[in-house]
Length: 396
Ligand SMILES: [Zn+2]
Image 1: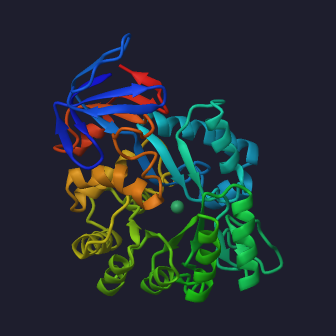
Image 2: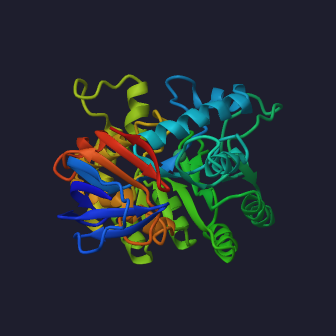
């Protein structure tokens, strides 16, 4: 039985609560109105807040920060063995940062190795978070990367290329068969005449992918940064838009109307600009940051459901809380950010009956932090206790 100062149950901050865990399940959560089973260990968490294990909404466990090695070089020059070895470390770092679940949105050239990594974690071969995996992700032929310097040389790509509708349908089915929990499709990418992002698939193509995936009980998520790409993805029936940088009022209204959530990945944008030399707090704010703040605030104002997902891998695994801090910095209330990282992510991803809340019957995925993260989001980094699936990974 856990006795913290306060409990964030996934929706609201509660005081006077205790939480009883049996095996891998939450048995009781609330005021101490039940009889304590004989032999129960009582863990006092003085000065701490107990929360549901955090859910990372957008990670790439098979990538590491681009200021260490460029994305192209990771895809082209690192062996699958090296990438897996790194992913093992990344999985552990993620769990030890209090993220007991990750939605991993593409191996970027490492084929179906996320499905294998997930199995290894489930078998307790290595420590790591629960994984919701995309496997390879789907891109339109010729639009993705690495880009070849010569038309005579075909380079391996960071995702599965498809050309026509038949191809797309077949790829969706293949990825599901190989272990995909969801399908990720790139609704736009940088293939314009000036390397700008342009839409890749028609609404019809995206709708075909969602129809097939939904038949198999899987959701489709879309990478989209342009207004047109976002629009086609929304109308095509995807569940989340990843990035959404150039969302307009019209697009965000459509998202709200269709119940499509936004995963803003603020930390990826900030990281890449800093790798390019931006000194945050010293230099002037880059145009891209100003625009991203504006579109994020527009999405908030329009009432779009906001997921928490940083595009981890672009920056260091284990530093996942960076996205939560930036969400506050960009205008969200800390309590809403906590909701995004727990109940909202679990609801949007379709896992509300398993994770994301401190509620009787859900999996015992719990963390305790020092202080109150709803008054200062930075407290989310002060992790003192980590329990995943009833197993204690950290206890200070
Ligand atoms: Zn990503």
